[in-house]
Image (cartoon, rainbow, N blue to C red; front, top):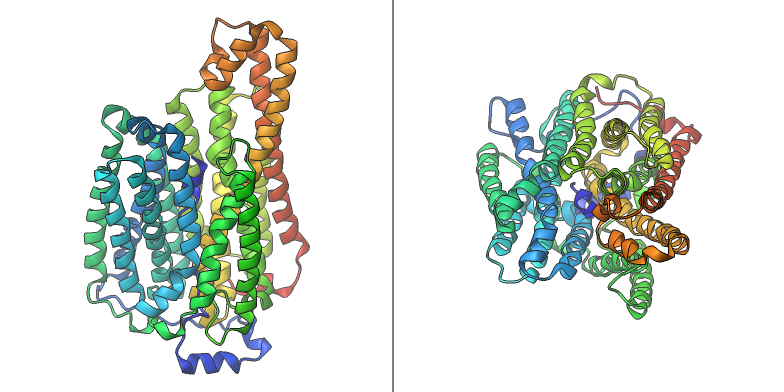
Length: 550
């Protein structure tokens, strides 16, 4: 379920013409640093035909809500899909397929944009979102849904990424914060749809109704966005050709990322991947990723991830700040709802509201973003947003069966507010401080970093949770030798924990076991957030005092 948040929403040095290539090669180290204060240069590379450009961009941003609806609405229907096909044990593949394809495809978004142009690639993403959705509607078995939903991730996240590039390409500098704030609001609203309405839709109809509703959104938003971009001039966004595409590096990366995801998923208890598969994936990843790095340094084509990125310290810090938020996404999307269900015995509606509160916090910051960021020094601002995330993370390290429900709502709202602040500030920071020729490419890598941070953290957090819970349950079995069947029933269905048929002491012991297991995972989350805060605090170089887009 948590993988639905990997979402939403990468690459530039790869794709330029020969003159651009020569200019990059002639750059001095100073040219690769962040722009000096007051010297930010920005060029409009996508010209819209509409007279009211601001309104056109707002409407275009609004259409990207379909991407987030695709993620959350479908993921809320996973159990119904498994039950419909009598293949509940294969539901795992739906989630894994989506995560694997989305993570693997994201580094290639901007190389394709640079070849095709942002407008053509944007429409291609809509097609790659619509066609797999149709496959899910007419699918005769669960594997149609697995394949279709996985393929739709390319189109869905591609739409979101294109919108970010379009904002950068078509909007003046003075409006960037405003439009990225609107984009954050749209994403948050889209992420609310699944928790609020997914279960209700499936219970009243069938799982296919979810895909039908998604298809209606796709068609409507595609028509609207087609009207907005009709006649738009995106000639300047085409800066490369297919001959410049790094095929060898692409092959190595396409093999490496799925192996890494499978490797981390295989370490979790109950994984469908055996020991031999784990070892094989580890070997393949090490070999292919090593060859990928070697190819990046030696290739005569433009590399997929430019080596210039590693020379700009501010870029590494910006990416690290959002990568370290991965455990927080997993905690809010998976473990806090689990705690609400197993320990607090909340209804699915209330759990949906808790998840929605996290998104509402993000939407609130997006609403305030345009007026909120005024300082020219980004460092204390980013530290402040990390404090917003760290505070609920520390509180949730002490979760127990007596934790008041209202505190969960408050913590998730604060965490959502802080995460939105860090993400948006990092976005603006990347745009303002990256060299002009790499701006779009660095921005397009943003969602890939978030996705990998959450994907890798999820496996480690599940491993921690499972091991702690196992030890707690073993202790309970020793203390309650006559209630083994009650314990087994509670592990199969958390509702049995609160049943009146089991002893009160056993019920409390089971609630404490779940609470402490989840609290242990939230310690992992808090440590990562603290490391991010310390990283920003420890860094005192001038790159954090560069210009911020006004």
